[in-house]
Image 1 (cartoon, rainbow, N blue to C red):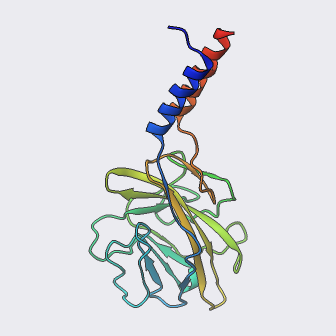
Image 2: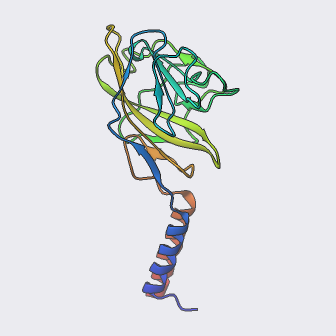
Length: 205
């Protein structure tokens, strides 16, 4: 079978379409992080939040406390396992949650812990700076596709003023995602397919 340029592009377009997925984004939510122990619990799939119940929020994924100095994945009192794991500096449940640079890739190669865990010293010289925006990467359990990867843009505070959860997004098919990006990273299989198309076009010449 001869592979023409048009045929190759159609084949690749069909593959890309079948392999494509959506990025679910919650932009400019600007949820305040209270300076108390209750903090605010957020369901990252729905955007729902709760800052009045110390037991958290049904279906909650993450809980920010004390302006953002403390962060925990124990946000759902009825949950039996955490649904959300942040990218950390290591794989222990108490390791500091990483402040990722814009464009940092979040995916299966990132460092996560397992089980319930929190971080109580998020604002350090090597991590978040009080009052400045930063990015938290995460892995999250979602029914049907698990895990998925995403990012949160936050401003954390350590001066007894509220922090802010600005925006977040995640790729719904489990592909890696760049911090701050609303465009998914190409999957390994898609890159292979593109390579095959390019090879076929070169042989045609």
